Every structure is written in C-alpha cells, then in structure tokens.
Length: 162
Image 1 (cartoon, one colour):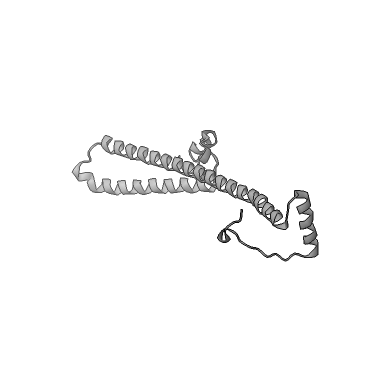
Image 2 (tube, helix red, strand yellow; image 1 turned 90 degrees about the vertical axis):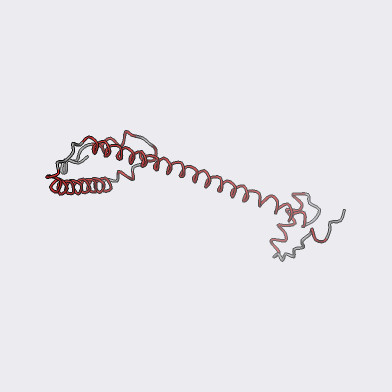
C-alpha cells in the first residue's frame, strides 16, 4: 500500500565509511529490509527514553511545585493565626484597661507612645536576634517539628524579651 506523498518526509543523510558500516551492521542485527527501516527503528526507540525522561522531569517539577504551594499556604495560615491571636490580645487589653481620667490623658498619651516604641524596638531586637541565630531558616518551620523551636521561646537574658 503506497503512502500519500504528503504523509512522507524524505531525508538525505551523508555518512562516512565507518558510520555506513555500522548502519549495515544494524540492518543485519535488526533483520531490517533497508537502511530506511533501520532509521525508523532508531528514531522510534531512541527518542522514547528522552520523552520518558522529559515526562518524569515535568512530574518531579509538578510535585515540587505542589509541595511548595502547600508549605507556603501552611506558613501563610500560621502567619494569619498569629496575627489573629495578636489582634485578639490587643482588643482584650484595650477593653480590660480602666478608663483614663481626662486630666491624665496627655501624660497617658506620651507614656503610651513611649511604651508602643519600646514594644516595637523589643520586637525588632527579637526578630534580629532570631535572624542571626538562623531560627527562621530552621527546617522545622517547614516540617512543623515543634521540638527544635522550643529553645526559641526562652526569654533573652540581655533584653528580657521573649
């Protein structure tokens, strides 16, 4: 059965003497009728492993991407949880505080601003200390292993901060 002309592609290959001998050897080993049959066989069998490797690489990248998305979502969820705890704590503290008399409002504002600055400086020092100790690079942050994070929760001797 003859193939239509548009379904076929013709290749002209120039081979040196050694490659020509190797092609003839392959034809005999494969019991192929012609060099064209050897060429077809090589194209089909030699490209299959490359396609399988490419598929495997894409699969590995997809798995890695899925894992990273899941871990980043976990970190985002933890961050949102910490923010909600902090927000709840601040709201509780504000509602639990007694009302400040009108005559003491200006001094209370000054004291409140100073306290707010101290809290921010304390948080910045703790963040810097933890960065220097590479706490945020700890693998336990990604795996969720709390055992390696407990040393992090002890107060700092120099600042008294947690």
